[in-house]
Amino acid sequence: MSDAITIGIIGGSGLYDMAELTHREERRVVTPFGDPSGPYVVGTLRGKRVAFLARHGAGHKLMPTELNYRANIFGMKMLGAEFILSASAVGSLQEQYVPQHLVIPDQFFDRTKGRVSTFFGSGLVAHVAFAHPVCKPLGEIAYQSCQAVGATVHKGGTYVCMEGPQFSTLAESKLYRAWGMDIIGMTNLQEAKLAREAEICYATIALVTDYDCWHPDHDSVTVEMIIQNLLANAKTAQAVIADAVSRLPFDRTCECATALRHAIITRPEAVPDPVKRHLAPIIGKYMR
Image 1 (tube, rainbow, N blue to C red):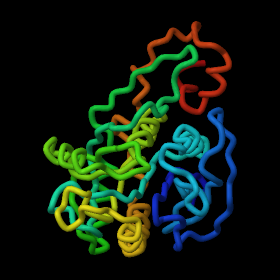
Image 2: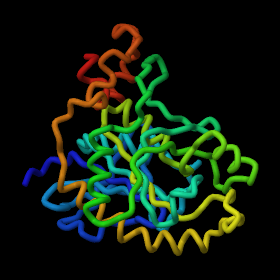
Image 3: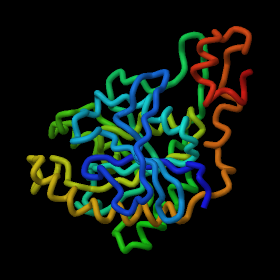
Image 4: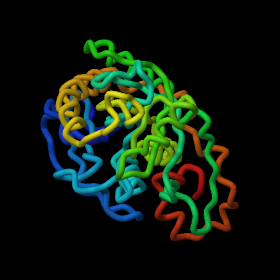
């Protein structure tokens, strides 16, 4: 077994730990963007070294808007992660996505309001390709793992990322359905964007907790309803992630691995030295 940490796991609402994780230790990481949601729990899962982060912090104390997405992903990069599996609770916008089903989305739609979702700026400009925001091979592994553990899973679909913390209005929910959106959550788009900039493969395992308020039988989404399904989903999510970890790593010939190769626009001599130092884990191989 290698001691290298190449696999990151981000646990969302209801998934605050990985029960199967052994030889665990807390690892605190200082990033140029501030503190992550909490310490990373580094340990062994199915013979692989992984880093687990509870997205909302210990005791679920951080709202989606309050999350330091840059620190969370940059910390994973500093630890050596090349793959991130993200587990997230979502609402369903279509009848076929039943509560306690799983979805492996392949697209995102942004309905957030001014969240910082790039490492660049302060004298360094880069524009990464993001037409396909989920790593296709990693998404396929997540899908196969859902099937392997007997979960009901749907492959593909669009995740609407809303601001929150309130749930949708009925008008919003009906509009998203009319647009053909599939599921709705509050966190994953920024993670996907930043992972791509950091050249980390990223995929979401979306855990359906409720029909959004469009559904005539679910016109009032409650936290109690969601928590009941979160608890039911948590065991499945842990099994899926463990199985997916056992299938990693793979040869990274995907676009994620070289996302910055042609993305950096600023001439190297024009980039401020402090920016070069701060972003060295990301840009070091392209800019000395």
